[in-house]
Length: 99
Image (cartoon, rainbow, N blue to C red; front, side, top):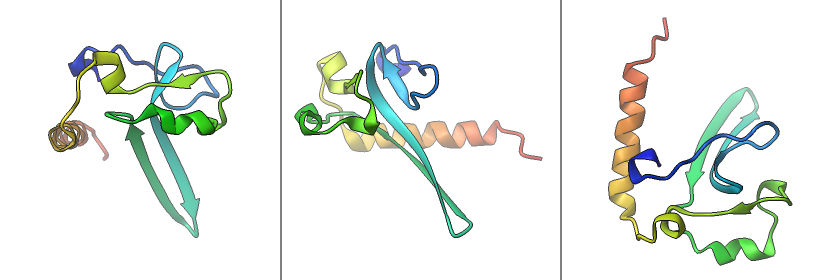
């Protein structure tokens, strides 16, 4: 997000995720089932935000959602963005000492 000049941050607990001011742009999650952990994240890139009109995203009543497209007024190529994110993950994992 920073690379695209989007000033995003974490909010204080209990609001998990990544926020731009008072609008959520990315979600993260963890699930445990039968001794197996699963985790993931989602970023609103070119998301049609009208899909959120009929629900309360993440059970949070007081705040809204946004997308990279809405903030920058640019449409993003999802393949290129996914490749950049994958590259960042690899680089971060290489820099992490897990010993």
